[in-house]
Amino acid sequence: MSDVRSHLKSLERSRLSRSDPKRPGVFSLAGREWDLLDEVFAPIHSPSTSIALDFLGLTEPDPGAAPSSLLEIGCGSGVISVQAALSNCTTVAADINRSAVENTRMNAERHGVTDRLTVLHSDLFDALDDGARFDRVFWSSNYVRAPADYRYGSVHERAYVDAGYRTHRRYLEQAVHHLTDTGSALLHFCERGDAAGLAGIAEETGRELRVLRRRTVLEGTDPVEHTLLEVRPAGRHAQSGARDTASGLPVRG
Ligand SMILES: C[S@@+](CC[C@H](N)C(=O)[O-])C[C@H]1O[C@@H](n2cnc3c(N)ncnc32)[C@H](O)[C@@H]1O
View 1 (cartoon, rainbow, N blue to C red):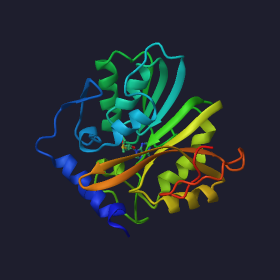
View 2 (spheres, rainbow, N blue to C red):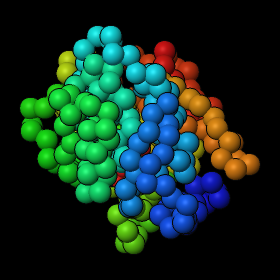
View 3 (cartoon, helix red, strand yellow):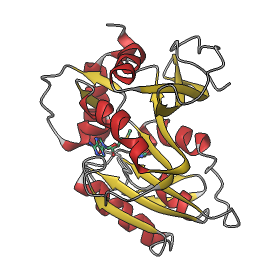
View 4 (cartoon, rainbow, N blue to C red):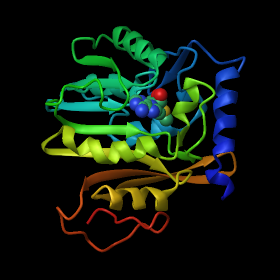
């Protein structure tokens, strides 16, 4: 396995972030202050959250934006969901980690958006009503693949690795069932993930993946490409034929 995709390296990142003696209780991002609880994914230790804000056009909230709705799977400390709610977006934020649920509620209160942001403790879509539909469903995922028999040592590790890509498989299967007629199911993925494995799961689950956005950032000395993927039922739309050079996935036509 290439080093960049090593699940052991990602587990080490989780350990270092969790045990950092300088880990703050409050951090700054996108011009705001955010509470950070123990056991919750720390945006200050990874570029992912800032990149996700950029991918979704939420780096600067727009209170005058047209009304919309978002389901954020894996809300962590709640930065993305709160920025969406500040942009006139009725938002549901869900996480499997109870500390993340509490942390997102704290940040929703801190930024005055509890009227537009509902927070759920949920394993992916399990706690949602069957009929819940959104303009966007989004997950900034734990894109590194761990072996199928890996046993998590902490709930914090669930932000970093997905054992056997079981959660990615369920996300690809289920996200499209929670969309409005014109909605999009989105996945923030990364070169640290197993793009070929994900493409195989898409095929097995009758989904196609399309690259909407790409951004390369330096992590230490490694350039690492992040991608915003759209998940769609296979065969619904003609594809452009163009392919992303890094992942081999089709790009926006
Ligand atoms: C990379 S972190 C992103 C956190 C946050 N969105 C951010 O950008 O700061 C991935 C998140 O997915 C959550 N997660 C992992 N598996 C999940 C599942 N089965 N259901 C819901 N959330 C899950 C993790 O707990 C973690 O909060």
